[in-house]
Image (cartoon, rainbow over all chains, first blue to last red; front, side, top):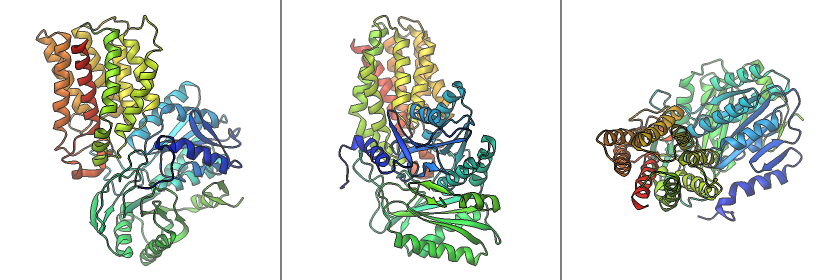
Length: 333
Length: 212
């Protein structure tokens, strides 16, 4: 496996240094401990938004730090949650006196480390609220699992909650809006190839040339089922079915349709996926009023894609449309 | 030997060596049903502990060693294992605060507090296919050995053997906590990596007590 790295142990530190140098107009980076904050942090009187998690999902989360979205991102080692120290440091760095919201993807490691950091921040007098993103319908949500995983829907939570904080909403309101997005967003993904963690050096799972994994997460973990490769439209139908049945989404709903690449799939294929997904939604009378297509929540060089559908109302739509200026999403400003 | 500060430090040094030695094994177990980072994270965490061990004051007792292990693992391991092992060592350190060496009942209290810390943080129960499935048999075996009048070494050996059986017993199970729970029946046939690293840690404790 060939990779553009120096020492595998320095992958995150070197990537974050490069990110800071490339986007110095938007962010500054701390190296010890490692976190990324918007260049004007802390913004006095504004709720601070902090997210984070294992690296390897770029542009999530660092690419979403900036005006109208996150105040800080805390990258852990590749596919490994950050520890409480940098989360606490980032929380302090963005506290403008209005409290801080932690946006946490529902993985045991992320939950435990963010919980510990929130306890420490509270002990320092910072008001912290946390929301758990759990949009992945591939995982059964029951007492017998750790609950659904947070995947690409996280981007939509960060954008919409970020706009809420930017317009001056109080911590309770920003958290409530984040929860509203979480309750209305569902995702499911497919992998055509595994990904290779730099320090592991081999595939996170093995797939034959003609096999795909349905219902993957974003950390290279295997999915729920392995099947033979099918035409794109059939795969889209397999992903979209469980998503639409889940809330459910029904005729007359206005939605945001988001086709996300896992890192190694070209745009041309993502648009083939989008075409079929939009077609299915139109057939069911679901109105796609906003869209997003691209590599936003990746799994290193994995080939594959995920589909995310978010139920919109007028307020969520306005917050989605609000100006944003980050490395990975930029409009209106 | 007495389970004093010399033993505590020797145990942690041995654990660091064992985690390096078993790094790839733990990565492979985790690749099968998790995300493949457990061996890397444990190795990184214990190497960090190793470099801090020498900074302890000469009058330190075992509880001080375990508190240092706890805070270092919490701040260096990441993932779920960092907070879980960190909380285990923190609660265990508190259980033996001030003791210069651990007698049988202190040892059982130490192991029990460690297990309770893991349960508190991770909210897992026996049979969920997690670290708890190594720790609970270890605690039970240690308590049974102590009740029969076993010495410290025999208590630690009983705990290590029970943890190893406990880790092995997770193989045919479906996981109900942690990342492996996403796999449903596909987790069957694979040993839980956290239970395995727990067994390695307890085996290191027994080996160290027998050597010194």
